[in-house]
Image 1 (cartoon, rainbow, N blue to C red):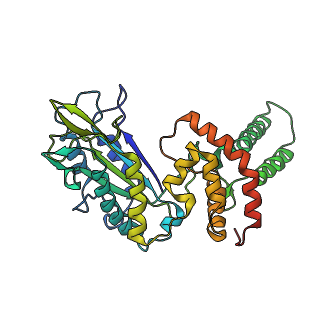
Image 2: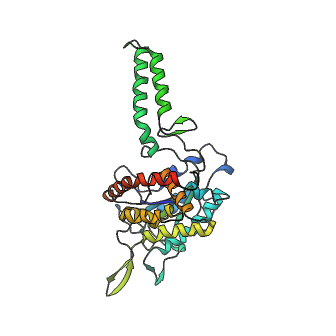
Image 3: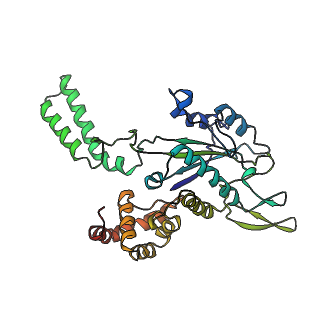
Length: 343
């Protein structure tokens, strides 16, 4: 599971209304009949209109400054293994979202009127999506790019020959293009993967738009706070502040596992992925110490993803971890080949 928490984009090219983001989330509903659409929902309601979402978020901004985000977007991306555990993708993901948002509220280290924050204090709307496209940052697109560049150059040559601007053998160029298409390392249904291509299979994921202000429009609740769970003295007394992202990410996994009786592999755990970044040697030591079958599954997951993914990793730490990963990759590959199950 991969979760991101992102502040509303601000600047001269962005409106401070949620309308643009909500419109973006309606993209999969275009051309569908009403009973086929995925509607917005929240903790207690279903089939909430896009207009209501915009109105509720835009009106819940009391005392926020112009340069402060009015809302945050949370994206929850279950893995293919997690999605396989669901019986009804849409309804199961809705149920999970409602349990997840309870943990989101608990991750705020502050009080409202002398009590802890609860899900009833959170003004949010969520939407399930079932499609994903390959982006320019995806491994498959990046590794296919040298082939794409050569193919494009050859196609340009063919057009110039057809226009009489240069001489050449079009049939030979087409043979070269076919060879490059065949040699490209990543394909889907026999076609070279390119940016913008839809991903096949179950791509269910969750988009959540969360107001910066609580449901009473009185208190600011920022998951983007620079402060982790801590206390500070204000007006002579200690008060809590901050949002504990680590706790939220870990609780998200536990909620999913409990809700759907999912047996999470070592390679999927947030805490393990964090160790990969902070202490790669410890990570691989723990990986190699797993029982044989669990280790083989972990290696399979690592090979599919390339490396563990973690939210908000500083670039320098990623580079250090990648160096360690590459040093140990040869040993991982050897372990995969010698594992007791076919992968």
